[in-house]
Amino acid sequence: METFKYQIEIDAPAEKVWDVLWNEKTYPQWTYFFSPDSQIVTDWQVGGKTYFTDSSKKNGMVSTIDKMEENKYIIFKHLGEMTDGVEDTESEKIKVWSGSKEAYYLEESNGKVLLKATVDSHENYKEMFDNGFMKGLEIVKKLSES
Image 1 (cartoon, rainbow, N blue to C red):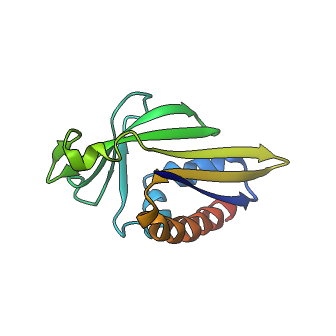
Image 2: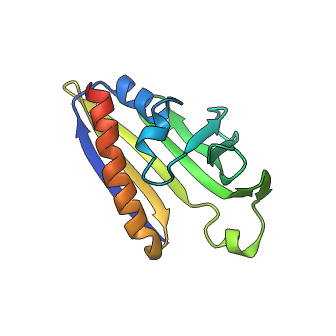
């Protein structure tokens, strides 16, 4: 497992960038390059349930918020998959990557934010993450600065 890292400078306050990242209207816009109908369903509680799903909300990843300080950082821990509404956190194919993390850090200085994203994954997914994050973070920047 490797950790892929991405960052972008955004001319907007951290509160605005945070809202663009996690607002139910803007989240699908910047995550489009990972999955055209991405949704996030969460209780926003550390240790609670978070699902990264398609529009049916029945297929995707089962995760939890490992650590969070609003407008500063959030770290998700991925636990498994959901297929047709059934969660799998125990199978052998899941155990290979279960516990991997995805994190977002907002470092604010002089009214600008340096947004850093990291994701743990296998090398064979690097191209997908590179494409998704490079294009997606540009959308976050555009939406945050408008």
